Image (cartoon, rainbow, N blue to C red; front, side, top):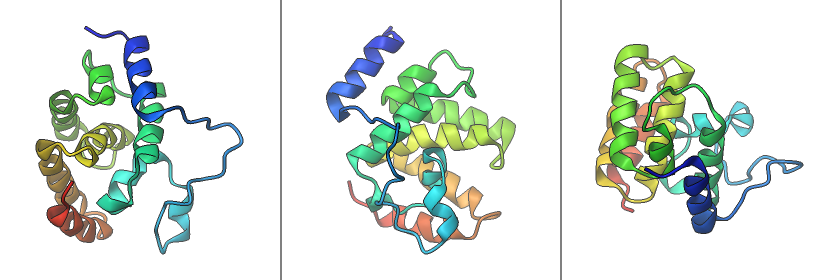
Length: 153
């Protein structure tokens, strides 16, 4: 099993490093709502269109997820590192137990998002399902779900 250090090094070799120090918020956020400009990376899965994500955005999400302590699952580091099966499994369990309004849901779906953006078809299906559920409480997710339905990676 890979250690945290090995996963972090693998992520940096693939995506580079993100210095969050004095950096301004990403200008890649395409949203008409001003509140979304300050949204944390773990909320992007339910706010941004699938084609709005770059490798830099995936890296920012993963670095945020590596620092979170919300998820208590033995496979969490593998999920954050890009293992789609683990990410989806953790997300399904968390959504069943905690629902869509819990910050844990944002974290686990962000891990799934990274896998979906990288082209994993099962992660895309999980995104479609979660956005469909989220659309019941957040109407913007309905439009995002339609964009994900037609997305090709």
